Each structure stands twice: as structure tokens, then as C-alpha cells.
Image 1 (cartoon, rainbow, N blue to C red):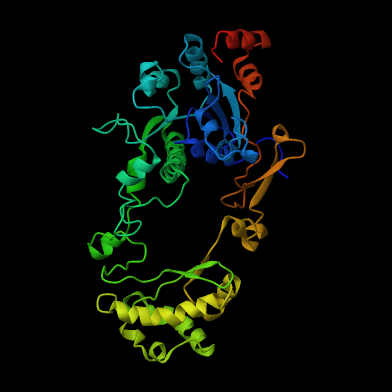
Image 2 (tube, rainbow, N blue to C red; image 1 turned 135 degrees about the vertical axis):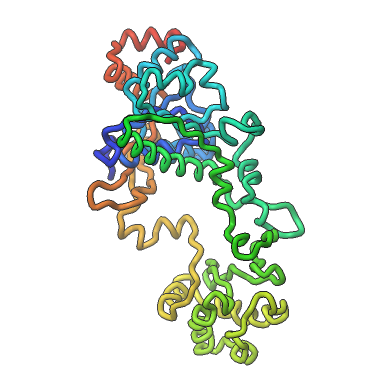
Length: 420
């Protein structure tokens, strides 16, 4: 079981002030995983992300949001009202001792408070500030309101997903664009730190969620110069529909598609053909098919359907585990689609000690929650999850006394003024 403190890590000498909402909280978490001292700053009533479900045992409460708990591990938590004069002065004092500020307010908000990058760099010229917004700090969209769903759509990533006869769909209920942007922000922070080590200079990084997602655009355009149609099963040839998800005997799913000759298909298809033939699933048409001539631009839908019928029976006759073992044995290019339960019990992740348990006394006596652990293993010091997400204002005394030299009376007075 992990301890309730941060361990020494790659970024242990550095401090991060995290002002982000759900758009960027994974950025601070990743920096904390690598050992940085991340101080999550919330308004006195708590961060709005605490009101995002699901909740522990479905009890809707700001201290029981599983969303919050997931994306705010390895952070200390304080409350601070930067809209008050006292709160702004306290924030500036914290900035003097910080290396990073990460924020996700609307463009211009911090500037209006006198806390924009141009203001803060005067206090700390070596400061690295990351601003995560929907469309960036500049441009015709910069002040548009948006959401994860809108960012996903306007990045071009939603258009190809779903059936051609209905609107496109999103691929997950999780905030895909926010997670992608937060991960890229953590990478950008590392690059900014490298630059500062070489030059001594801080910088402001303007990260647009739309742009971060758009750069992941489908490579099919580069290959075909065609716009991918809206159907998950349509091939790059745009003429036929090929099944890419197969149901197994135990209800599991396997991903597989016949590969054309131009994609080394003869070699990639060979294992499945051999296995199906050995077990008697291959029809005469299947065995006589000219696999060396398989071409998505010329094959007909009827031909695909006649190949898929015995393939469907074959997959349905085996469990997901049997198919995974056979894929290794016959060198077949297919793979199981894991459920959340499958991931939790996956022997590979368990062998690498991926899962970490943290105590949550605030949720009940003896309550421990399981978290994803190190995303990488280093020969020196690995990232790790060692601290649960903070309760509202949990580390106020610790941070304000240690970093700013405040007394208990100071903290109480500022709380009464709604500054913290």
C-alpha cells in the first residue's frame, strides 16, 4: 500500500501551482506523479470538478467525486480566493516560490486580476506558466464558450465516428480532449523546464485543446487523400464494410480485419486461415479464396460477406482467452478488447505492479481505493502515485505556515475575510 506522501522523483525540486479545472487537472497529476510538489488551489467552496460524477457509493458529495479523486492524486490542496485583494497578494507570494503555474481560466481572466503572465514574470522571471483553454489565448474563437464534446467535434476527430446514416458519435463518456490536452501540457512543461535549465528563462505556454486534438488527425488522409466516411467498419477503400469487432464464446470482443496484400496481408492473414482450416471452420470458398489478390479497391461486399460467415462462427466458438493464446501461437494480428474488469485483473499489469492502493479514511474506516500507478518504469526513480487527492483546504495550515510563514491566527483571519 502506498504511503500518504510524495516520494522523491524526477521533478522533486520543483513546485507547481495548479489553478486548473477539469480541463487541465491531469497535467498537475502527471507532474506530481514525477515528484513535483503540486499545490492544488481551489476557491473556498471547493473546485467545480468536485461536482463531477460518478461518486463513491453514488453519494453525491464534493469529497466523494471519483472524477476528482482520480485526477488530483499527488497534490496538496489549499483554498484561496484570488478575486479578493488579500487572495491576490497571497497568490503572488506563492508565485515567488513556484516554478510552474498551470491554469485553465477563460483568456483574459487572470490578466484582469493582475495575475496574467506579464504580471507574474515580473515577480518571478523564471516562472513557467501553462494556460489550457478551448481555442487558445488568441484568434477569432478564443472567447467562445465550449466543452469537451465541442472541442472533439471542432478538432475533426468526431466526424468519422459512427454510422453514415446518422450523426457522428463520441467514443467515450470520459473527457477525451481534456485528457489529451492535459497530457500534452505536462510534456510542454517538461520542455519548458529543459529550456529554463539551458537559458534561465521562464515562458508562457498557450495550449489550445482544439489544436492539441486536431494534430492527432487520422492518418488515412495522408494515405488516401480521401475523407474517411462515418462508419467504424468502413475500409480505407471507401467501397465496402468490413467487420472489425467479433463476438467470442464468453461474450468478449476481439478486434480483427482481413488485411489486403498491400498491407502485408498474405502474411498477416495466414495464421487465422491456418487455424480455421485446422479446426474445420474454413468453407470451400474461404480456402479457395485468392488471398494474395485481396484488394479493398476491387473486392465486392458479397465476397467479404462470404469470408466473414465462417470467421464469425470461428470466433464465437472460442473464448477471448483462447483467442489471445491462439493469436500468439499462430502469429495473428488480432487482439482482445478488454473491459475495465479485464484491465484490473490483467496479468501483465499485475506483474509490473501497476496498481496502487491508497487509504481514504474520509470515506470510511479501512477504505482503500485502487489507482493506476506508474505510467513508466525508470532505472533511477519511477513515477508513482503516493498521495490521495486532497480534501477541501486540507493543507491550508501546512502550506501557508511552511511557505509563507503565516500563523494559525493569520490563516483564521484570512478565512474570515473569505480570502482563503
